[in-house]
Length: 250
Length: 365
Ligand SMILES: Nc1ncnc2c1ncn2[C@@H]1O[C@H](COP(=O)(O)OP(=O)(O)O)[C@@H](O)[C@H]1O
Ligand SMILES: [Mg+2]
Image 1 (cartoon, chains in turn red, cyan):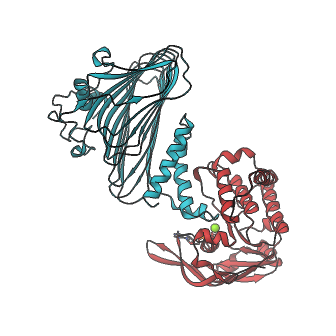
Image 2 (image 1 turned 90 degrees about the vertical axis):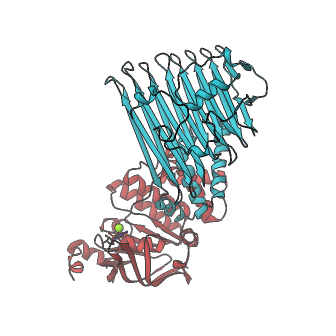
Image 3 (image 1 turned 135 degrees about the horizontal axis):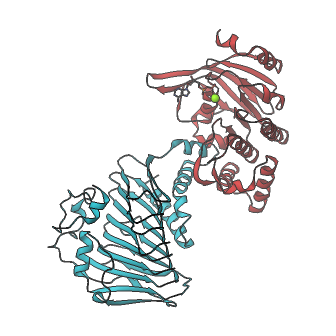
């Protein structure tokens, strides 16, 4: 049983006009096995929340805390956070020229698991995971994310989710830019991980359509750097009808 | 200054002052006096071959027997040609298919040395030549490489000198009809290395692929001036050099001059140079230069970039649990991979990757 606790988190970025506060006190707890949807308009700070938890150096923590089973996440380096069980599927996965997908995945799995997976089992594991996400095995030889289509990048993120089996997964707009078939394939991937493990999921999205495939237990509405409303799945339906206007103009 | 006028520039005074276009990036004080007429430099052939030779020969012959085949206005080359009495001659037999690389090496040259090497790949031969350099040296050299029609030659030069070495050299290839020249120039050691890898053609259908890898750390000056003279029609050239720099006063200079003469119709050329700055205090100059005298070409282009280490790459890898050092190594290896993966000898690929890893450990990145 794992618990990610975010308390009064305040985060800023350095801009030309000095430090700008983007997250203005976020409170959220995600337990193993739970799926939380975070929904909010563009620019409300959703990615900032995701990156801050993962430890992106661009963001400055101005206050509050994030703990994973009591351990202070904010005190850890980026790789330590991943080893502690956090995973971020990025909205814009980074291209890393010259580093092959196969080499990258094996290096990452070795780091996360603490030992190199046995070669034969690993090959099988990769093959299965790739085929269920409809990823061409030839991708193994390509450079990480380089020249991938938007959909391919997202499937590659979920492939990592399946192989790295985190305790808490943050999925930042994994649905954006996907056509209906790709959305289904990616959602099935997430659901496989949810069934096979006790992962807690923080599903960040702009649209409600992914929630038809991945059913959330809780929905949080995000606006202007904080959570402004919380509820169950029915809240997503309300957003579907009314949009974010009420929150943005509030 | 245009390549053309550069090419024809006369060396009235053999001693450069540092104001010449060709020398203005080079710290003359660090040449060990090789460029000065007053400096005594001995003629020597310390480039050593050992091992069985089948399909080729390596001999030391009087320089008069192998007169220079190409023109050069380089001061060092002029001094080398005046001084050198004996010349190392490597000949690959006609139609020979030499499987194992022909390894030439030199190490700790003692006093300052001028040397000449001539490689002749006879028609329709196939071979790989590797020249490796270790230890300390003050060396001025010219290597001329002649490819007869239909010959295929892989030519790898490794500058793995000690940190006090000075090495000025011209590696000039003349490509006969339908010949294929693949060269890899690797410069990782030395205090000052200044190489002139150049190509001209002696018939149509020639194809030159010039790869380069360099890694400069504190105080090193590594300079490569590539010159492709498309002096005949329907020939091809590709140039791809990648360099990394780390540490205070790490310095690299790359020039890529491609000259497509009026008669060089159907030329196909592309040259590229990418530099990765790993720390502050390092400086890379990169100057691609294309001069075209005919519109009837198949293609011509160039690209040059010099950039800092991308922290986003590091973040992405680390967010998957990969420790910072390992992530950095992966990214830097990845940067070089495009070129290194093309090196035709596996042993050299591995050796170079390891050397790059060692350099990174040494500079604490
Ligand atoms: N590096 C940055 N520099 C300046 N402003 C930033 C930076 N990152 C994010 N922001 C600003 O912070 C706000 C929230 O951005 P983001 O977290 O990406 O929102 P969302 O993911 O909800 O669309 C936006 O107004 C954005 O312009
Ligand atoms: Mg976002």
